[in-house]
Length: 365
Ligand SMILES: *Cc1c(COP(=O)(O)O)cnc(C)c1O
Image (tube, rainbow, N blue to C red):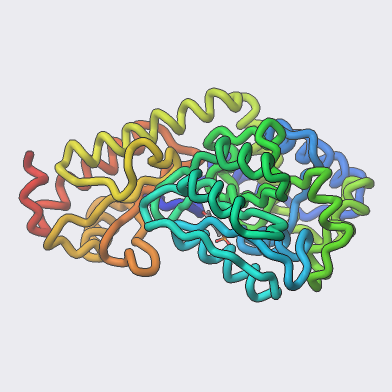
C-alpha cells in the first residue's frame, strides 16, 4: 500500500472507507437527519464552539468562497494576511467578488508578524474584516492565531479564518479565540475523503451576513441555516462523505481532542528532528513550524521532483512538491489525520536511502 504523506487528501482508516461503500439513503429521511444531528454536534465539540456549524458539499476552496460571499459586500475593505499560496488564494477569491483587499504579505516560510498587523489596523481606516490562514500548508507555518485574534477583536473587526489544514489537528478553540468564520475540509486532518467543507459562523458573522451583498446562491448561509434547523442541507450533500465523516468523528472523539493535538505535536516533532538528522534544513523556523505539514528545503544539487519520484517508485511513499515559486526548492511531508510517529520513521528511513542516490552527501551524516 502506498504511504500517502501529502497535506490532503490524507489516508482514511478502514472503518471510514467501509462507510463510504454504504448504499445511498434519502437525504430528506429521518435516517439522514439523525446522522446530521450527530455529525453537527460532534463537529461543534471538535471546533470547540457553540456557534452554528455547517457542512457544505465542496472542497476547502469552496468553503473559502462561502466565507467571502456570505460576510462581505463589493467595496468592503479587508485586511488579508498572507505568507503563502493559500493566503494568496483567499486574497484572489475576495478580489474576484469585488472587495477592496489590503494585502499584508510576509515572506514565504515566515509567520504573520502580529506587530505589523497592529500597525495596519491602526493606520488603515474602515477595515471591515481581517482574513488569515491559520496553518499555511504551502510553507509549513502555523500562525499565532491566539495573538492575531485578540488584536483583531481589540479593533473590533470580523475575523475570517482558513483553518483547512489545522482544525481537528492543531489546537484552535474557535469560541475562546473569537473567530467569526472558520473553515476546514474533510480530506485534511479529518481522515475522510475529499468532498466536504465544514465551517462555523459566529453571531458577529451572522450580523455581517445580514448586510452582505456579494452574489451567492449555492453557498448561502441563510439557506444552510434554514435547512439545518431540520437537520438537512439545502442541496443534495455528498452523502457518502457524510457517512464517512460520521464514523471519523466518532473515532476522533474516542481518541479525544487533547490526545489528537498531542499526537500531531509528537508527529510534527518527529518529522522535523528526522529531516534535520539527515542533514536537511526546514523552510520554517521551528518556533512556528506546523504540526500538520513539514516543508523541507531541497538540498543544493538535488532535484526535488526526482527525489519524490524515487520515493514513490522505490519506497511507495508519496510526498508533496513545493507550490508556486517554491516548486523545486522545497518538498513537503504531510502528517495530519490518521498518522503516527511510525509513519514518519518510514519516511525518514526512505529519505536516508534515496538522498545519496541523488548525490546528496550530507545524508550519510
Ligand atoms: C488544502 C487547503 C486549501 C484548499 O482546499 P481544497 O480542498 O484543495 O480546495 C485551502 N487552504 C489551506 C490552508 C489548505 O491546506
